[in-house]
Image 1 (spheres, one colour):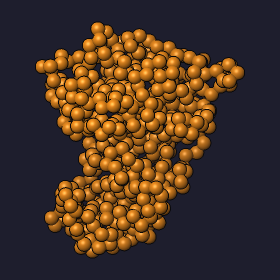
Image 2: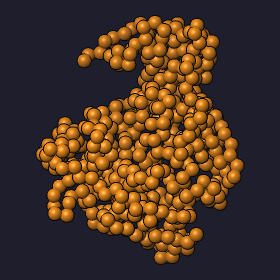
Image 3: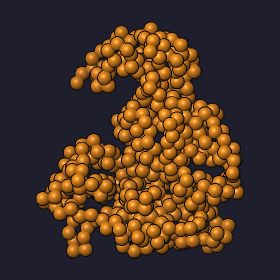
Image 4: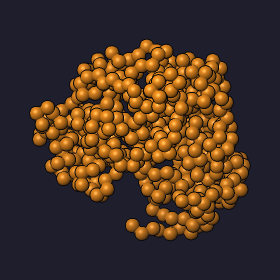
Length: 514
């Protein structure tokens, strides 16, 4: 392999880059190198959305897929073979505004204007991805599209109005991207082998400088991982990107998983859903929710759409964060993690993968290849709940998942309970499971299980929540699960949300003010 230039589609032609650090972000390149300052820098950590751009790449069928992402934490070499669209691309050559932009003007959605380009790009992705035959997007679809954009002027109503008005064909002729032209360019940019990029070090020499490896096949990835066990694995850089922008860390050699075709697949058979490690969070949750619709709320509340478009389920699991929202549900469902080293693979139960705080069972040179999730059984009662200070785009104080297999006599045949935010790792509640297993699913059993949670967890106090609050919430969530899944008059989700419960006293129900 030899050092290659970074090549991607931009504004109708192929853009080539060399000589910049591999950890240079897309935002830095836009603003500092190209002087395209329409894309703004706000938080530099993927939270505010002021830097939102749209990335285009070929999907498995060879069609153009457009996804809004945060430019501030995307590394420049990850653009190789893809297309980049920014707010500068939307206005026509004659100065005519794109319908997305014109709608923002007409609806007075720009407010102070700082965050507007980011909103516009999220709206443009929605506009381009909404088939004309589908009609207007729903309010929920608009909210999801804008979940990664924060308006500091609190002007969301006119922005939502603009997100609907941009589809008003009577006033604005529908303007769509020439997808075929972009697809042809991207096909010409596709590489046949591993892409390797090195930037000159401080002495101006490429030899010995940190490398960015982007293999195309699983075998090539496994070989490079075994050869470079200390290389930093990067997928969506939704975590590693902050190491650079906030901690100014030197990443050393980087091994990029995002181009490995075999790791971007989702497969189903009668028993198992298998999700490749490089599948994005958005696609992974779509697959999970198809089997388990109870995950729908957690799906939309897991970070924001731009983060889910970039981050991967494999990366979330491998990271091992105690507050990772994916793990409690996967633990409760009995998921397994497929690990690979060279040509050898092994499979572990996910609850055996975490050994300590951000410490996993991965050996040097080994990597997460896939997640295997059992398909749903007919007697399963399953729920997940996330508690955080904000509904959207917030880190959990507590994330809970409950999965009970109950026979026709209301006996709990198997119980799996897992929490995030309650321990140094995502962790099953084994003492609570012991109380539940073999018991009848009734109020008495639920109360005993609530009390058993104190034996499973001694949560910490931190900036998000106190230890006492976390334990109270954990108990209340178990009680909520009981109310929703009990045999006699189970409560709908809306009904449960209308009440507050005192921990340990399920009879004390107080109607909250509306």
